[in-house]
Length: 350
Image 1 (cartoon, rainbow, N blue to C red):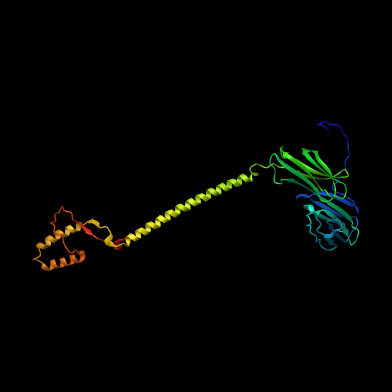
Image 2 (image 1 turned 90 degrees about the vertical axis):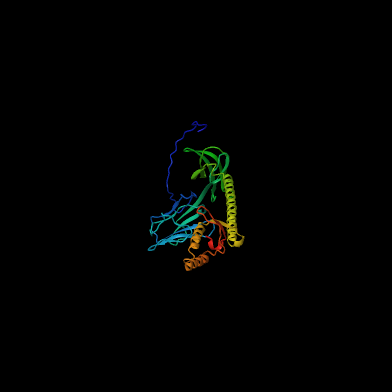
């Protein structure tokens, strides 16, 4: 198609297989490094074998690591650093031995060999190449913000081409492509101003014009609120300053009230323990004194008749009231007498 119009139409018949049967030949496969990717390495033969073993060589000419092994009459033994997936063989089978890897990490690339019995020549050899895609920034982008897409392959031993495709529905539009070398293992796309809605992208891997693998990635937009840490920080700082100011004012006010309360208690205590002679006189209306005077006059009239009774009353009255000199002012029923009495405040304090 060109400019939305169909230019050339050709019919091809494609044969698609989910497995690769190579016998003793070497086989190279590509897998994306992600949490939901996996690969099953299968040894299958019409001939029976008493021992099976899968080994891993991470890099050319590096140390060979035993991953899993099994012998007739025994259980499968896990030996290597890669944990077998749930589809791996768990019991002995003389014609089938599977090593399942899930998920596939980027550093799981290398050469995997299936060895039967103690043969030096492996039954099958599989070279695993991993590809990884990423977006920067990784947590989402704002509009008018630049975006960098990166596609990386773990190893290059033959002609490998990486292609970035922008997906428009089911159609992939070629954005950028490049042949990889041992010195350059990644392809980047720089979107200087990202203004469109979130788009789906895919990195395709080709070897000798043959499509080998596809690694998808999605660009997502972030809201301005989640990408505005400076504003959130400033608001938090202002709030903390207000809280500190309020706390200082409350502490000062509490201190003033406490000081006033202590001063009041001190003055009250000093007033209670002061000399009673320096106290101001307390004036009270003593109505009982008027009754005493009336009684005194009646008693004078009966002095000759009962001198003992008068003496007794006189003595008790003077002992109780401790009055040294009586007021001789005539008492009338309507009169009110005022007297000055000094109290010891320490005895009458409540």
